[in-house]
Length: 395
Image: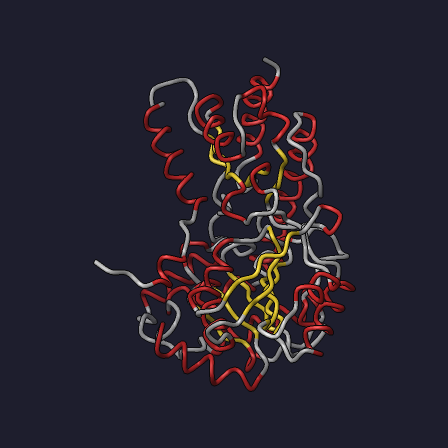
């Protein structure tokens, strides 16, 4: 059977592959005194709060399960617009908001609408792997630009300018980022965007973790800068609705009919039940619960990062958002007889029964010495993981 070159260029999602391997090992350990602790996948250990669950049940009982408009139901688009106004003091009209079948669909639609075959898109290295694969699926070429801790593992305007050429279409950034949890300083983002605009390019921004920002300096939407910025967001992270597969896209008004036409053909519409449920995300009671959870994620960060540093799993830049720790594990290599973070992660599964993600997924720039810990797990599980790893470090 012959497969397309496009399909061949899509690498495995190694985070999921590692999670599968960890699950198999966990089955092998069944009945022992140590179960596997999963710090791999970026999925909140919280689920949708009560009002959201109740709204989903009502939608099913009331028969609100048929196709919706391709751009989403109007009440949800209005609620998202209102959230931008209340949370970020930014006016984002509902007519510029397109509700999608997860942030993945939002990114796919944006790439299909904006990227021609052969177009290059600049991205930071490290970055979330699926983002570059959406570019590939649109026949574009992701260009990974190595970043450093001094740059918060984010692109700078200087590097964007240095890597721009006649084939460059734009930039795809993430703030806060997966896997580092770091954000772009607003001043630097403005410099990047101004340069991209001067070249007639596009600024596409992944803001999936914006609701989980912990620092007022960074917890601002890029949409406050310019209506030409394209922002992708999701109900999966801050709103704890991962399996509901619901996200949204904010685009310049002339782009809405283009995205709508693509969405009609590729997705028809997002899940009707998920949309009606998500309206309840913005109720006062729900927001209060989400803010309590945000505080819990911050508490986990504040406890776990210093512990990792003490063990020699150095986190060079404290994450200002999301729930990830990007840790340099190279000081452990000699003692464990491994040469990179891939082997180190598998050894940790076997020795400590702790699973986390090796850097291979996230790029090429020193990712062989980094691992990503997901703190989207309980404090008790993080504490137990630390105990197990520290015990092995001391041997």
